[in-house]
Image 1 (cartoon, rainbow, N blue to C red):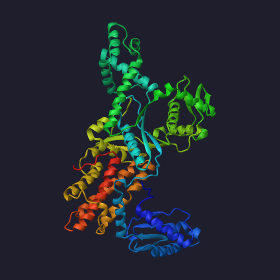
Image 2: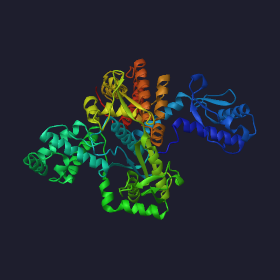
Image 3: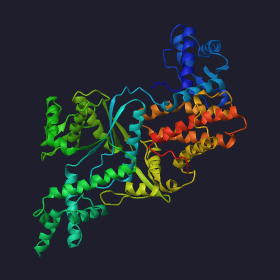
Image 4: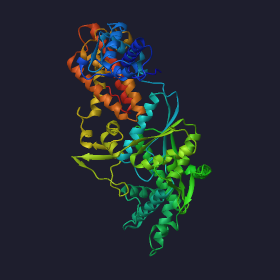
Length: 573
């Protein structure tokens, strides 16, 4: 796979400017040569501020250095590639590229074919992405849906830049929240069997989903049925979960409830098109002794200390937000303690890099985790976090109020069933992860081109229909004469296609799938505008073939973009 720097055009111009500077000054520039696309055609296609940045080192006024560099560039670059080089303002150099040079970019894109946009910079690094990892205490909500879509698209982006990616889901199937789930399930079973109001424990789970689970357990598990029948036979005896536990091991309810919720979670994620390579259970860390072993490793580094009857991590000394409890006064490990053990487990499994997709509310713990990895000798950068903000649902201009524990929420499955996975995925990743997401249900329901997800897919469909009409599927597009492509809209489309590899790399490295969605939307707008203005299939066979070659590159990029986003590539809509 190739390793681009940014784009074919930017690479080419940067090389020319660097060579001109070296020819003029006898050495390479001390700073990176910056090339940017201009905002106005009268300023050329690309501009560089290298003269402004290097003037002091070169001992020449910026404007004079720019004039000298422009002169060398005019001498070095064939005019059929760059016919004009201007100097503007205090020392900017503006370069006007020819249609011939832009057509050459399209030729390279067509030659790369389906590999276009792939990088090898990851060098097959074993990279693990852990995401969602919702406690198995209830169905996935819309908030989990954002993390699921972000994590899945990020994993694919890292595959595209050359990483060997492993997707993992971590189940917190131990601890207080599972105890609360067990007790809440017991209360729902008693409600079904004996009536009355369930005595859901404080901080327990009150959602109606648990009543459905309890009903299924009561119907299908013979141990639970026998325990309830025993209670019923006692007549006046108090009917509560304590009494139920006298006849039923709570572990039975724990297993039944968590297993059913886990199956629901897996099915919901499958419906969203999200897959995992590993489903990791917290229970295995406790059974294997890894939690205790990790605590001892921290003690050996003098980074675990006792205070107020608890054991604390000495995190602040190593960059953590605050020293944090590892073992509570009652001897139970905290989430942080178990998470440190879990990440040592990841390291022992041979991952070169770990990326966790998490909510912004975990910031303090994230800093403590990174501090713990540093204490235990793992290299800086081995663990990083792709952080996202929360999701709100908006309908009719109002924000819907939700609470998971109180049972007031819209499930991810409900959203998928109504909108389809493609719409859900698009809306979940189309906003910058660090920004709060207002999921506009009214817009998402729109089937017109006002819906951005539909708009992008329609661009793919529209191009596919052109090729069906042209009946040119077998043509070798990389061999087509591209010289007829001289219209401004055609040249701008090629420049947009030229950006695709850089968008892939940037979207991965900045944990920003929204950048790819924005690119797809911009590219679709450019195509629709072009197609509304210019006929592709004309009486001029040479022109038609050139335009079809452009559309072949365009549909390849659109198809790959949609596939990375986890969306369908419809041939008809």
